[in-house]
Image 1 (cartoon, rainbow, N blue to C red):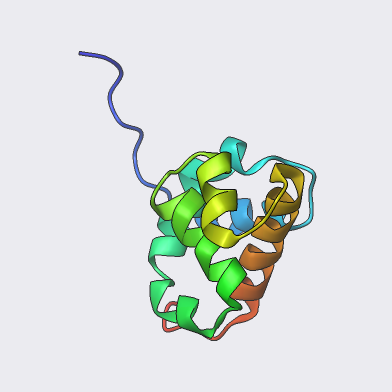
Image 2: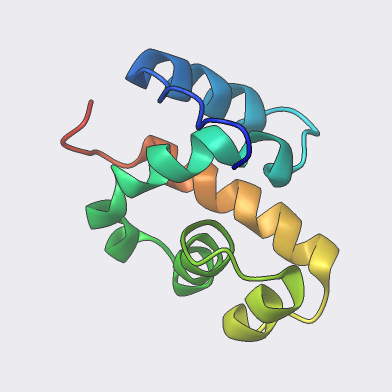
Length: 101
C-alpha cells in the first residue's frame, strides 16, 4: 500500500533544513517534511508572534490548508505576499526562545 514513511529527521537535520529555507528561494513545499515537525516542537512560541505570522504557520504548515485558504485566514490578498510572510514567520520563530534549544 504505497511507500513506507521515511525515518524521522534528527533535531540537527531539521535545524539544518530550516536554516537553509530561511535564507534561500526554496518554496515551503519542498522542505515541508522538515518544517512541520520543527514547528510542532515550537508551538508554545506561536503566541509570541504577530497574528498574521501565527495564522500563516497554523494554516499552511500545521493544518495543511491551500494557499487561498491560508490567505483568507490571514487576511492577505495575494499568495506571493503570503509566501514571503510565511518565511518571515519562520524567521521570527527561529529567533524566539524555546525549550527545545
